[in-house]
Image 1: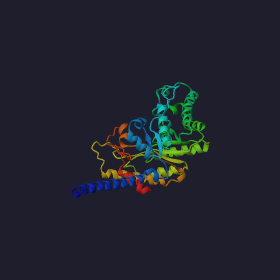
Image 2 (image 1 turned 180 degrees about the vertical axis):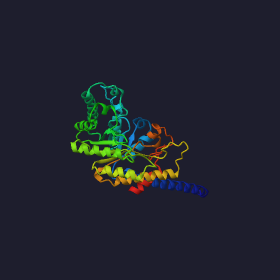
Image 3 (image 1 turned 120 degrees about the vertical axis):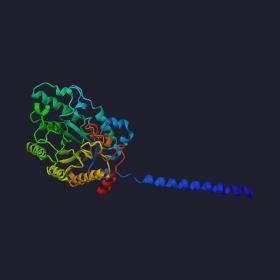
Image 4 (image 1 turned 120 degrees about the horizontal axis):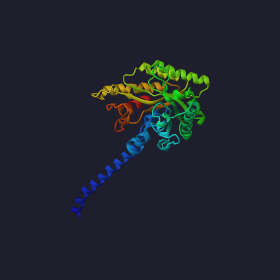
Length: 356
């Protein structure tokens, strides 16, 4: 019996030690689970958004999880535009747009509508449309009001007209300007008729360094106010790069905020390889320059009166899905806060610590 006890004792101590380690590990795990993850969106005074692709939401689990957790506002990158929602004269298709709305609703995210009237991504039947001015007006009015009515109560704001001015401040020649005099004002009026409560934006890019374009937009706002044409906000796309002049960016923000309208940085990305250099390396220098632009943009947005802060929206989620890689064929671009695997970049943490 005595020999048996001596043989069992070290074995028993080993079991006890194992149980002790398991208990400690469970305690550490429980404590780690009780610490909530930190999100940039939670330390901001305004919504943080991203444009999204419904195919990626459906097929890519990591994309879906990142989009659902990191952002408080969602914009359909393409699937509320004319070509997708109104493919035939007598046919509307809201399937993919509705999927995006449902995704956002399930996660208590705001939806921003983009865009009702644009010169790009116009369906062929609209380009081929024949009729007098009244017929053109009825066609565009029907499009705007059908789309706005469909999403009434679901969409917080609409980019009513997108990119109507050239860099020299002149009105861009389009099928809309060719056939419908004063189409900008009429588009806003028709949108307001369809939804009295939605926030109506004019959206454009490249105002920094292009004072004539900026002035044309300010003149549009002044004219609308004078004529009681409804306009509630300005979308500043903020497709900038690490070489963009800070002074020019700040001037655009200041002048836009001075209108008293809601301000939306609506399509933010900060390009690091704007000249598409094939030998470009996304090194620490480029990352620091990009971080400085992010800090400038977020801090300047915070300086806008709180009631005018509609939000900041990134133009997609991760670098590999950026339109700069796809549309512009710039494979070495890395313009967003999340990398190709949707992991947070170091800039994310610095923004969080700076802005909290």
